[in-house]
Length: 335
Image 1 (tube, rainbow, N blue to C red):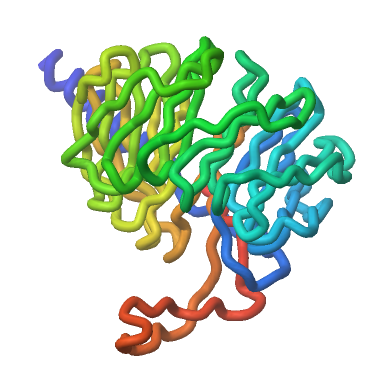
Image 2: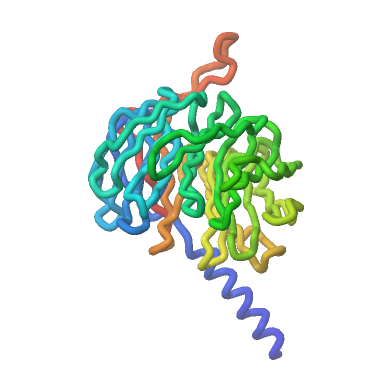
């Protein structure tokens, strides 16, 4: 009988955890352009939202729009550097990086780079460098975060996507078209390892468990690949939803969240550094493919909008996209 009670308690605990997350509400924002990454200034609890040609800044305590950073054409990523009071924003259509003050959102400088179509961006506090990942030129532009000057270009041999730092001198970046992770020495500013993460295809979002040295890559073929960040060996694979472009690791709850464009959130539980299980699939809204989380509250935020009817394919446009319905852009809040 004692064992039955133990089993019941375990099942009850699993059920309660699995029912704990749900789409709470949405924060509506103006503008009808596309979107990509979101980033949080944890100190101020401000959410930076890439949104076409601007960056929307939302205070998470009031859930109000408090600023709009203009002239960030084709914006993709925002990197927060609290120590320097700076945010670094990639302008994909201008081949530039916009640098603003975190506290006032005022422009410091707009830095032109040689890299083509800057996308993801990472601030590494260990080296005080900013890594700008260029989708069309297959390289990384490195800026000195203090002086804002370009110091090096690192060839990557493929299309770079999201990146993370271990805070100890190593930077990791997914290479989308080669199903790889590149490891960059943040001091030498060179690639020191290349790891294949097949069967994962077209990895985009990337997260890191710094304590256990585990990397989490979400891939276009609905797989999450877990990789040992020291050896590069594959630990396991897990099923996720379709269209994921973002992943976040919650170190407190030991949960990994995959935001899936199909309109779901896959929640993975880390039992230990080498054991993982899909805990639940939370309904969101179609198009919510990127994600971030407030570490202070554990609340998740995802960008999306409503879409009209998808037009028929044609010879000129074999993969047409549905148009965004005007006035429908929003940030989903998952608690």
